[in-house]
Amino acid sequence: VYKRQLLEVFEHLGFSAVARYEKDREMWVFGGVEVVLDHTPMGDFVEVEGSPESLESTAISLGLDPDKAVRGSYLSLWSEYRTSHHGKDLPDDMVFPE
Image (cartoon, rainbow, N blue to C red; front, side, top):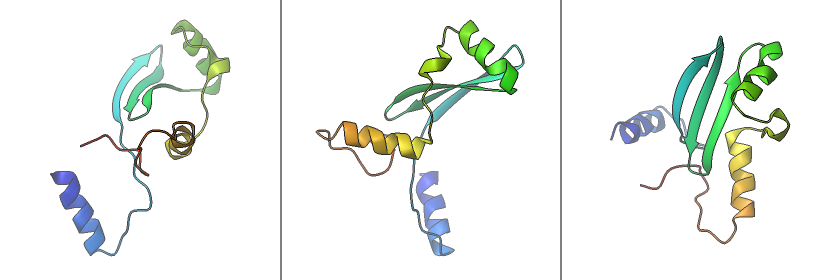
C-alpha cells in the first residue's frame, strides 16, 4: 500500500520510473565484515562488504568461493537472467509477483 502511495507522490512531483527492482535483505557482521543475504526474484545472493584485504578470507571462512563471485548490478543481472530464461514470462522489472 505504501509503495503505491509513494510512487504516486513521485509521479506527482514529475518523476518517472526508469527501472525497478525488489529484494529482501538480511545483514550480519562477521569478524568486522558486513555479510548480507539478498533474496531476489531471481534467487539469493550473498554480499561480503568490508576492507579489500578482508573480503577473500571472510568469503572462504563462510564457505564461499571468491573465484565464483557474480559481478554486476542487479539490473544487469536481471537482464541476463531474463535473456537466459526466455521461455518464462518474466516482467521487465525485477519485482516479486504480487
